[in-house]
Image 1: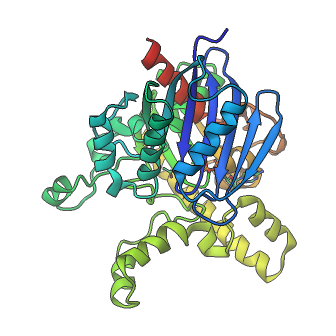
Image 2: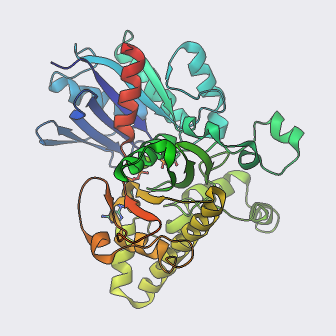
Length: 403
Ligand SMILES: Nc1ncnc2c1ncn2[C@@H]1O[C@H](COP(=O)(O)OP(=O)(O)O)[C@@H](O)[C@H]1O
Ligand SMILES: CC(=O)OP(=O)(O)O
Ligand SMILES: [Mg+2]
């Protein structure tokens, strides 16, 4: 008998991922994803505990409709919002500002604060709020817990969190480095320490979270000291559709010389840049396929790959200097866990200087679970450490409501 399951919601701008998690045995009695919300061809894919899959294709004009479809799928297996084993809904909330450093029970006041942070995460926080509100209408008595992407980064020292702009302006508008994907960086840095057989308090790790959104962090003895995303999830690495770092003057230039509006530039940098902007594809599998096929199209894909990898190498170098001593580099999320090519290219030629090196045979192995892919002799371990934001959120939400 379960001592309580948590329904974890990870709402993105056009998708909702959900998992019903039993933290006691880490099992997932149900999981799924709703994609293309508000677009044509919206669909839900649901997986049950025994691996059976169901697909629902119907118009889902907004997140509310998506969550209702999800609730109906769960209810079909007796796992709905009023099922007795469900003790909480755990929400991944992307922006928690400086205030939320811990998992937090959602009250009207907490909800208002998440709303106040919408301008700092316009792609993410509104979807998170809809998740909270819809879950409440589905069962008003169920506790809801917010777990913030920013929480793990609140330990970043002031020297790293401050932008070098006028202090009065920065403070008045809450402009600083907040950092995101924190639940993943926390989980992966701890799991990486365990993989090395050491306590997190003893290890310095560079975590490279490479999904559709991508970010790097430097974690010293279990505390985050630097991360690549900033005020919003736009800064830093090259991502699927986001540019990451650009000279801020690019924005003035596009406004003054190209006559683009602020909204058009926002759309360009957040949705039409990164890998998709460079080569028309944001999926690393497709990019590798095009490179292998060759030709002019392959060359465009290769350049996108090289820009992506170059940015990562710069961050590895910078974070090595920030940490002083690096024990491990951990690759995680969709690209980090699956692309041996990206992993090899990121550390290529670093063995004599910075230290990390991958063993080609270990790197190429397709295995689940955390594993070391550097050779025994390496000074800096290189590891693949699958992230599990959902488990992390479920454990934290469960502890809060039952503790
Ligand atoms: N087998 C694979 N090889 C290379 N890249 C992959 C593979 N599987 C997934 N990816 C990459 O991972 C990305 C999705 O990562 P994920 O962590 O699921 O992102 P998000 O949580 O931001 O939606 C895809 O866009 C694709 O680029
Ligand atoms: C914060 C962020 O970039 O999240 P995601 O990778 O889910 O878009
Ligand atoms: Mg993700």
